Image (cartoon, rainbow, N blue to C red):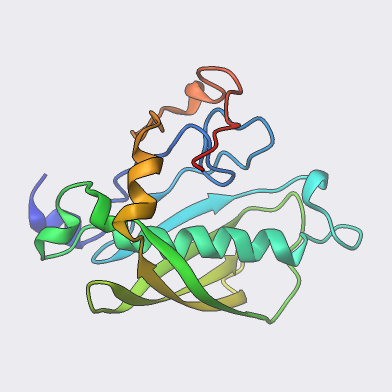
Length: 187
């Protein structure tokens, strides 16, 4: 694919893991979300949540929305860009959330699709500032967020790399591949 078509946001799929609560295909209690590049240093996911994620009747729990935004903003780091950091999946591209701020503007209804978007505002290598939003089907921004991400220290990353986390693009028919062996300990 050409760089110009990527910059236009062709929504190329991003990899998922096997056990992540948000994107893990083998996590039986997880959300099983699929993420897509959405242009230069941007990503998105389309989500419809059922009653398992309810807060008040008919409303998605705010903690779940914060979780989705946390993952979406962090995945903006994985979206394509002009520098080498974004061309290959390397351990330098994985970051922890150090600070997260969420502003809830409107309730998000259950059983209705919404879009979560994330993008990089500033990337200084070991620290990145990112933003995100949840947009309802009618275009209303229901939730906004910002976060500070920090690079995972090598001494923390190495134990995580000992596991086959199954990092690749999975098809929609590959949910729950490999069973539910997601109780991995790194310490």
